[in-house]
Length: 552
Image (tube, rainbow, N blue to C red; front, side, top):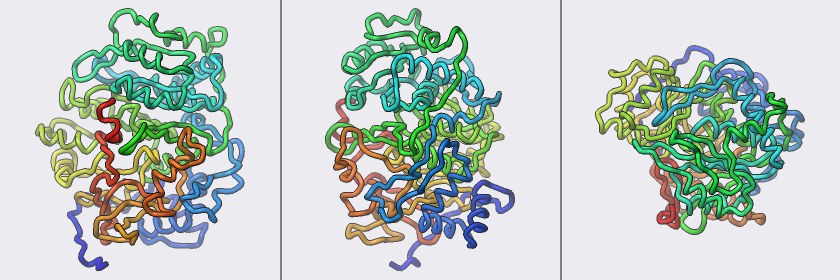
């Protein structure tokens, strides 16, 4: 097609060519090792796709993945993406060990939300100690490698601690937020037969307290394999009454159970293969029960490290607030920020209660450097005529990330006019299916109005028309041509892989079809997202199929 027909949209932000970033350090390392030269981001991206085995090996080394056994082979390049090849065979590692590599007094977690008095903190040292106690208690309950531990839980430190504790002993974590109804939760958790569930007495949302005990009781009744239910009083509503919930125990008693003679036990990490299951995520299409997507510990870790360290250039000085629930993959993505030693902010509740400026207030109070949100929330901010650039200092804020739905061109205008003119606004896109991003942020390229900046390194993306022909500057189906580490390892309870193949490889044989429509600008390299192509709804980033609309 004639690329000259494409138009270059307005430049909203330009990168600084000075200074050292992790991207530049990695690029220089690759240039020296492989005797090549990359004139720009696009040329390095092209190399990373053509040489994906070498690229991901360099990411492994550059980000210092903690492991107990080295890999024998990165990947079998005779296998295509539809063969779902294994990565880093022979290596052994632990996801939690990589997220807890720091053991100091730097703050790891800030937490607050609706109904909270102030902002609570946990240092990396304190986080490690709590994970050690939770892991000890889970082990004493009989949780072992491959068992499922789940959370029906708000976005709070206890959720992060429970997940890391489960991962440390090789159990598989899955979670959903308290706003899900009983049937929606059972449609998910009943498929994976969890042994332990963490939950709460009540939650705050939209200015009200919502009791959670009755829903939890019904969920537990519907899960035949549950052996222990750990409940904590997230909202102060008087005594936490759990006697009608089978196998239940209060978190305080669970914690005491994990101590060794009243002392915090040593934290150990089960060493597991790269492809060992870490998370089970849920996503659905237009028919049937939610799909149970299994993501590996190594693949999730490596892809998140690339995005946080190399694409976002996060350091130990950064603090990221990403507004999410535990039922959205952005929560998993956020928690991985701990692996680079940066801090995360957990906020639970409405993002506009008690006042529409609540997230901006937190940004100023804590000194948030990266704010993650949804395109819808930014539109609401503009509709309500909020001007944070005037009402707030935003001194440390250097990047805003947006996902969940396409970011409209007017939102780019709003951010650079009314929030902060010199920050990086990045629309990022990926999803539950890959627990990561395909396209998004880089400090190396301009931000163009209405466009996702670039394809991420190691992601060999393109658009195909209805005939399977590669197209530029016109609408097409978003596809990926070569393997990447955070591909699902399998679907739960689908040993022959038929559901996996149907989900991603039915449309174009041998090519991953992601279910998104988009348009790639041949001049800028930017991408305009046009919405879902598979009939799936995507409110606030959480996908629902039409079969679920009346059941959640």
